[in-house]
Amino acid sequence: MCWYCGSPVTENEPLGRSMRCACGKDLRSCRNCRFYLPGARGSCSEPNAGEENDPERGNFCDWFSLNPKFRSQSAGEQKTRAGTGDAAGKAKSAFDSLFK
Image: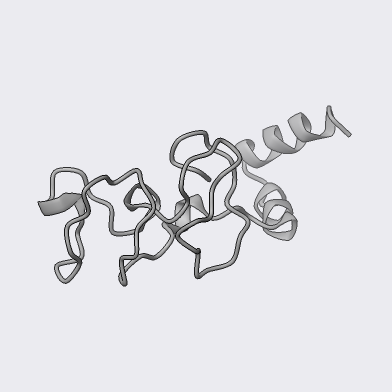
């Protein structure tokens, strides 16, 4: 999902520098990267990465990798998670069924 609006990121990597979310924010930005770490030098935990001027703007960083928590889940993964028998999965299934 986008760091700004929470929309799922469905594009496959590598993400191009010009790719944008529906909200207009750049997808290939430090804020969406798995190495983004506020407070670290340049807000990046990758020691070989160069410093970017604005972590919210698109960049050409060779170390960029989309943070796995921002990747959208496929429908199969969602059904598997919902069918595990846990209370949260059951609640999500019940909620989703309201809109079908």
